[in-house]
Image (cartoon, rainbow, N blue to C red; front, side, top):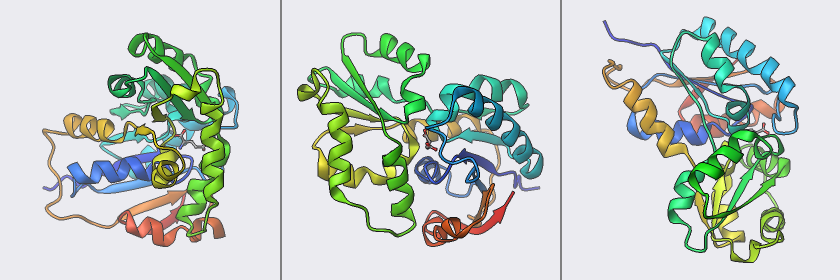
Length: 263
Ligand code: DGL
């Protein structure tokens, strides 16, 4: 019998679609449930306690409802704060998303790296540990931007965003001491890859994120498993279904998510 259990992707909003896209390239027939906590969006301006209380409970409900084979926390904020807690609460593989500081350190020539994430992510000790372990010889600048998360959501709703906003956000890195030598930017929030063309137009840096690495990890963890013979339309599940979510329907369909439901 074909194994129809889905991969369950989780984020506060549409950011995890960037991870889903990279995963689909490796596992085109994987059944997909994409869950977005629209009622809790945004995560980046919340406290550690709020995120730690919300994410494991929500994932517990989602796993009970959809019985996935694997969970992907396609959100740096939730992963850097709650990954260990989610893993201990769930009895299935959980793949997290952490800032791609290691690959950034591998490509930076000037040895000045910027970590662009949410405010909550960039203050995590997890980021200190990654910087110390993998970029010990680099200056690692950090900037948190809730505005960039909103810009990515707006773009996917089909709204036109202001090019000057991206340049202003990048100045949050380049205006710091040593920022004039910045050559590599870690997109440490899954939303940000969705606006990488706009960021590239505003600042000529190398942009690095973890999506391909996560996709390879998912393929590795499921390599003995059986998949349906053809791709099926995926499901997008939101914790609150309102007009902002409805406006995302065309973008979700472009990522293969044809059914939108409320949890
Ligand atoms: N996409 C999420 C991340 O990777 C968080 C965005 C937000 O809700 O602030 O950090």
